[in-house]
Length: 304
Image (tube, rainbow, N blue to C red; front, side, top):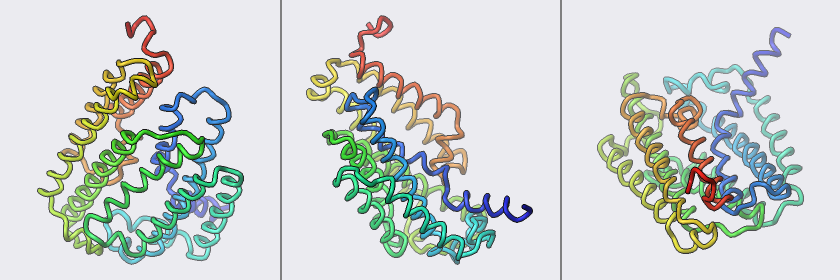
């Protein structure tokens, strides 16, 4: 019992359940396709979410195996289970196989296009772990592509059309988060007085990253605002009031940019979303406003 508990904690840490929040992007098509209250689409989307969680965890294990030496030289990543030797490579391999086996059962019988997207996500991340993460700028675009694949997978899981505007918004916000992550990584390395084992970080400069953050932040807000007033959006949702939800997007972007310059937590975007109360409240309010406007066409008394 004395060794079982630490081993279990190490295994849980290895699969990084806190990162599963990123997979909530698969729910976007469900909400915007107006199928949030239909049992079958909800069930399929939940299965899609679980499949991406399992796949992402498998990728994290592989990535930690590949980055073992670099992680041991990192001021924070050296505490990861494999780098800290709190879990053995053999146990990690067994856990990896178990995750992939369960994943197969979860996706069994789901639409072929969804399975193809999930496989593309897995192999793209394998390529990222072994090589693409060392290519300047492409490393961040691969991260952004992962978010877009999640949205597409959510649409294919329930066989609905996904708006190109949603894809564009996802591209901008994921690039924004990627640049913020790189900036935080560089700042953390500089603060620790250590040199990075990852060569790609040597190509990034804080000043240039700040410019990229400004561009992608503006792109996110503009793309979302244009989506809310697009003729097809108004026709499908039968309301032009979705534009009001842009204020939540703007607040979220501004709050995150504030955190970028005042804290180190943005090195892990998932940690920010789950620990910063203003962002949590903002996300809940944005989702609630979208659901009310999309499903009730803005006809509730307090929206008149």
